[in-house]
Length: 337
Image 1 (spheres, one colour):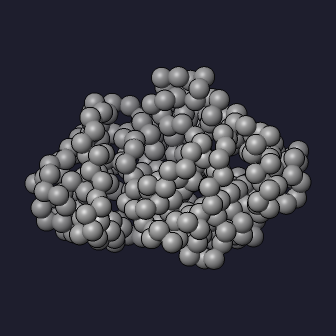
Image 2: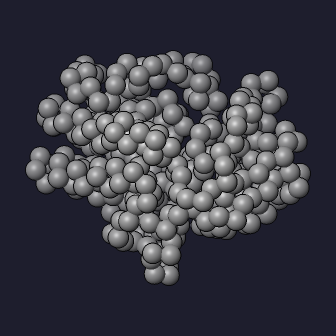
């Protein structure tokens, strides 16, 4: 595959690039500027150089169309977007990037014809409302979408537009709805706090996770592979799918982290507020349509993250700027996923 990743220098984009390169695929990162710092956390320099940078704004339809043609792109993984805090502070900017940017991706695919076989794009579990709005048990992909943020509403809009592009133009697409994604490179957003807690404990530093309750922990390598498999496996249509990892209470995350890093038992604490997104989401739909997706256990995912952070400590390359930045206030409403 020749894959164009919009927002490819972000956290999930870096892991997708890593796994695509391992499979022998050709990778292009479409971004406003070249910034491979997250790639450097997980790849050697010789492999980073294989990720070809394509400068451009995702809302710039002529530039995006030209890039797809110039590089003979066969698949697009669309990750570029603005997160909850920005969308809350500036809804017009949030809609411009998240909604118009996604429309530009589909318009560009329409313009180039059949050369792009599929679009796989990042939706979010934020399309759902709080867990109290749903019946007990895992929620299917078609459970009511009741987002509590502009960000979640924009993601609902993207899912609807993707369906219309298939209906009207036959453009195949898959939308994926991640929840709390953790692993090396997760340094932004409220649900980055479990990853920061792992890093802090390794350094002997206390860390307070601002939220509690239940969440769905998804190891980043699994999420990256879900995007890739959604590109490569046989599929026709335009659906959006829940992803599911380890659905546990924060207390269980804390116990699991302490089994891997005993010092974390006293160094890491967590809050009591439940994030206002349904956490018990079924992934039966994606397994039925696209096959089984990889699932790393919570303990194994934490252990792999610890190993990679330890390697960075030994090499003197561990970045602690995310730990030193001011923490957001304790959570009382949904935030970035």
